[in-house]
Image (cartoon, rainbow, N blue to C red; front, side, top):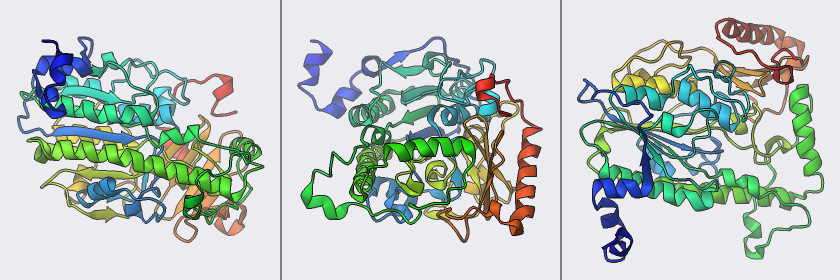
Amino acid sequence: MTLKKLSHRIDRRDFIKVGSAASLGAFFNHSSAAPSGAQSHHSSAPNLLFLNLDQLSHMALSCHGNPYLTTPNIDRLALRSMDFSKSYTPDPICCPARASWATGRYPSENNVVANNRKLRADMPDYGQWLGQHGYQTVHIGKWHVPGRPLHNSFQLVPHNSHPQGEYGDNLIALSFEAFLENRDRTRPFFAQVGLMNPHDCGNSPRTAKHPFPFENFRDQLPPHPPNFDFDRREPEQLKRMHNGIMKFTESWTEENWGHQAWLYYRMVEMVDVNVGYILDTLEQSTDHKNTVIIFTSDHGDANGHHRMLFKDNFYDTSSRVPTMVCYPGHVVEGVEDKQHLVSGLDFFPTFCDYAGIKSPPKMRGLSLKPLLEGQPTPWRRYLHAQSKASGRMVVDERYKFIRYYGSETTQLFDLENDPYETRNLAQDSKYSDDCIRMSAEIDRLESTLDNVELPKSLSRRG
């Protein structure tokens, strides 16, 4: 009897359990190119689940106070996790952010300063590193790290993945279930699970000729955000992008903007269901209590704030992302950490710390483990991020400073008193010392980095 015929006679969960080789073969390819070292000598090393979304802003969750959507599954993960409130992407666009996750290095170092730039061949990624140190490694869903084929990094890779979350995220959740039911139980696993939504919001921009089609839901449209009217004094690189978006949306009404935001929130709710399925699958398994979960997003979405759409800018709606870490019995649950500055660069060293192995050299992040387990530890005073190859952002406990090489215009925002970033204090002489201090901090970090040489079109100095 064929597996296809057999599947009609048993339910989905039994189908996923039928024969380890058969079930995994239905969902994954086995790669002989990915590193697969001897079993870790740390027999108690936990499993590692890196659950990530695409384009989810920190503010786009009901557990973070957003009244325009409901995210019950991510909310319940927050109740079981330490939820880092001051968490930022290393770069607010897809490939640079994901390459930074995978290597623990800034885009200017790993070469992925734009979506079409290939990752440096001499930098190991976390799939390779953890596989080499005894973990069974599996990738499911979105990877998006150019120049690094999945089969060179993960021992199990999917047959295919649909580029739209509406169609692919259900299969990603099912694939994780298939893996968990049939995994190699002689060693711990590292699973990178990349869901696509709410990235599908990029398919939805409409014009004034396309009004909101659901009359009965019109009262649900979010109004303009408080920072829809913003400070126009922006660095030239950002202003060019911003002017393009404003030209595209110049005929939009408040209803059009509300429609766009409404759609974005529905896509967040859509992916929340898949997050719930993945969490349910893990919680119903014997692996639940021995699995570290890091949940995050590669970047956020402007969603009308600053009269912008999408990403690739340093405003909080695009650069500030949710980060939650759960490890039952080890991490304090239901705590919102509003103090520590956290970067996507921290995930790789955190995985290594929990695995009990050394990190690769020159990692730029910090392990979150001491914070998660309440151990006193020195922490960063400044957090850095990059954008558009030439852009640099630094955040401290109160201020955010932004500059672009080749631009005389800088930005300074008081995140404590102006959380919507409406007033650029860099134009005020009273704050010149803060601008000088934070610009010097950018120079300090740059002097320590192993930056790649870039063509003139992407030059950090032009």
